[in-house]
Each structure stands twice: as structure tokens, then as C-alpha cells.
Image (spheres, rainbow, N blue to C red):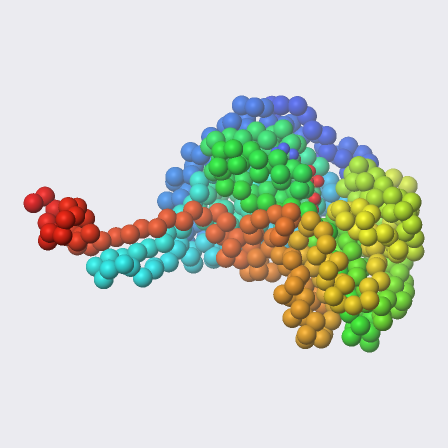
Length: 497
Ligand code: NAD
């Protein structure tokens, strides 16, 4: 592995970190695969300073030119799909096929915002008088910090970096300490941009904190846990910095009786939604509410399909499910399942290590009978676990779906129009998918309600999240207004008379 991949990107230069070393581990082999030099305090300062200094020039660059440069970023990423996918697999444990897809989606986000950025700069609004022009201008904010987790390192970064750049901002990016390699390897994809427009650091919470607290950072775009999101929100509130939070989820998955003829499709869709990336997706289905009439058949089909999935080496093209990202993550998942079992739940399949030796595996697991108050049905699991709950009515399913502090996504399997309209309107979630779980759309805003966060990524909203709004009121005539001083009922006097 070349040492270039462990270099930071500061002011257009790829430089070795001068701080402590960060060890990167392969969650499949449990071996150390790299040592990344973290940035020193001076290097963090230099990255933010570089972004600040580049901000004026980048904001003044015509949007069409910025667009062309972003298309070039996308092309460079696509050309390196194999290398980037392999790095993501080695450091994160996600199956390689999924990582190749992720590189494609990442590049697509850059292409999408390359065009969006030159398509929208505000609007004209009706003016107060006919001699006037009133404009709503959308301007860059300045410097945007982009802080992301490990589960989709490149994709989640692109949902921030691409619109931030398209809107004319410069960026300081920080990947998760668990998956820095693939992000650091992106440096070459940005080296045709002016120096300082994109800066990439590495490190854990302390480096993130330093970036977030820096007064020169105008906006923080964060994806990660609710706990970290709250800390970041506090720091940003203190200095009234803009903040966009994409936090955790506990997505419900409702199965309605009318899907009986296609129960296997709904079961496969459910298993995909629960086990994709070993359940480490912010929108993983983590609570299944299945209507009584189809519950037994659904459970059977779900378990049969789960037992057919291949758990193993994430570089092997036949592998469906790789290891979890870390021992800590696997232990958290196992502890949540064990607590549910201690409270009366039953494991129908899984809940074992699932691997053949090394690797932080947890077998895809189906659980029934978990009491409603257990963490398994209330708090984020972030692992390959599907708890199924039998419900008597759609009312009960919707009530339970809305019963947590989360509101990221929700899936419903039904073709019944009344049910679709009720779920669409009554479920408190940023995305409601019907019969096609977890599919993203670059043009469709993505984000959470309730404690799952605020602000939206993707779509027009995802661009506006990185724009300031300025109202311009332009009077073309130099004439006094009749409402000016002096009062007293006299004829208004011309200015200077
Ligand atoms: P995390 O909150 O531990 O870390 C996320 C990032 O924040 C990392 O880069 C980390 O180094 C950094 N960080 C930690 N403390 C910080 C601080 N005080 N200041 C600034 N930065 C800090 O989350 P994680 O374990 O990496 O990721 C898993 C979480 O991410 C899950 O809760 C998951 O639901 C969530 N997630 C949400 C979405 C979404 O779009 N809503 C998408 C993916 C993951």
C-alpha cells in the first residue's frame, strides 16, 4: 500500500500528518493495515486557514466553471473505482460489490451537483413598487466542515462536499477514524481544483472538535450518532454557526396483509433492508411490524431467506454479508440482542459469531417476542438484526412506528392505496419507501425528523443547505418617499431640500 494514501490534503499539498499515529485495522483479518499520521494542531489550523483563504476566489469562480471541475472529480473517481472499492472493503468490511456501487453513487453526486450548482442562484420576487427590483440571492456560506462516519465513507462525504463546492464554499473534510484510507486516497481526485478548496484531515473526535470550534468555519455538516450530533450542535449554537445534522435511525418496516401473494418478495426486501452492510446503514430496517394475517408466513419466508445468505470474506464476490466494522460494534449489537433475550425475546436464527475464524462477524439474526420497552425495539442497533413484531391493525403498526425518538426512514410493503396514503401522511420520517426499501435518489432530499436530525441532503434542499440567503431591494429612481420625515401632514420634501 503506497504511503500517499495515508497523507493529508492541506492547501493542495499531500502531506504527512505530524501528530500521533492512527492505526487502521481490517475488520475481517483483524490485522493492522496502515498507520496514518494525524494532523498536528498547526496542521488543523493550516487546513482551515487554507479553506478560508481559498473561499473568496472559489466563490467568485463562475458556477459553470465550478460545474466542469466537479464533473472532472466524478470522472476521476469512476476511473479509480476498483482501487477505492478495495480500500473501503479492507478498512470497513463492507462487501466489495457494495463498495464499487458506493464509488459510483459518490461520483454521481458530484455530477448531479455540478449541474445543480449552475442552475440556481436565487429568485426574483415581486417588488414593493414598479420602479424597484427585488432579488433573493443565494450565496456561499464560506468554509464548510464535513464530518462523516465509517459506514459509507465516500458517499456520505459526497453528499456534503459536492453541494458545498457547487454552492461556492470551500471544505475541510474529516473521515471517521475507522475508515480514513479511502477518503485520504481521494486527494488525487481534487488536485485540479485551486489549492485550499478541498482539505482532507484524519483523526477522531478531538480533531473533529477542533474543526467544529474554529470560528473560521461557517457551517458544519455532520453525519453520525445522535450523541456526537448533540455535542456539535452545542458548539455551533455557542458561536451561531450553521449546522446540518444527519443522525441515527431506528427505522420501522411495516408488512400489510395484501402482500400475501408476494410474501417472499416482501421477505427478501425486508432481509435486504435489515442486513445490507451488516445492518450498518442509518436507514437499516430495525423493527418489523407485521400484520397478523401474514405474520406466520412472513416470518417463515424471512428466516428461510436469511439462512441462505452467505457470511464471509468481504473481498469474495460470493459474500452477501461481511464483518461488522469493529469488535466494539459487534459487542454492542450482541449485548442488545442478549438483553432482549433476557427480557423474554426468542432468537429464531442467528445471534452467533457467524464467521469461520477471525473477523468481527455477527450472523444475520431474526428475533421474535422482544418486549416493546427493550432497547432492541427502541434504540439504534446498527447490526444485522431483524426483530419481528406481530400487530393486529394498521393503526397499531403506525402508532408503534412513530413510538421512538427517531424519524429517519420507514418502509411499508403494500399496494393498497388507502394504506399508502395513510402511511405517507401519518408516519413521522424523512423518507417513506413503499415496496422498494432504502433506494436513494440524488434528486430526493434525504434526512431525519425528530432526533434523527435536521436539514436535508441531496436534491435542491441539499444545495440550499450550503447557501446563505440575501434579500436585495433595489430602487432605480432617486426620489424621496412620501413616508419619510418630516411627519406633520406636509407635502414630502425632496431629498436635500
Ligand atoms: P460518531 O458520531 O461516533 O462519529 C461520526 C464522526 O464524528 C466521526 O468522524 C468521528 O470521528 C466524529 N466525531 C466524534 N466526536 C466528535 C466531536 N465531539 N466533534 C466533532 N466530530 C466528532 O458516529 P459513527 O459511529 O462513526 O457512525 C455511526 C452513526 O452514524 C450511527 O448512529 C448512524 O445512524 C449514523 N449515521 C447517520 C446517517 C444519516 O444520514 N442520518 C448515515 C450514516 C450513519
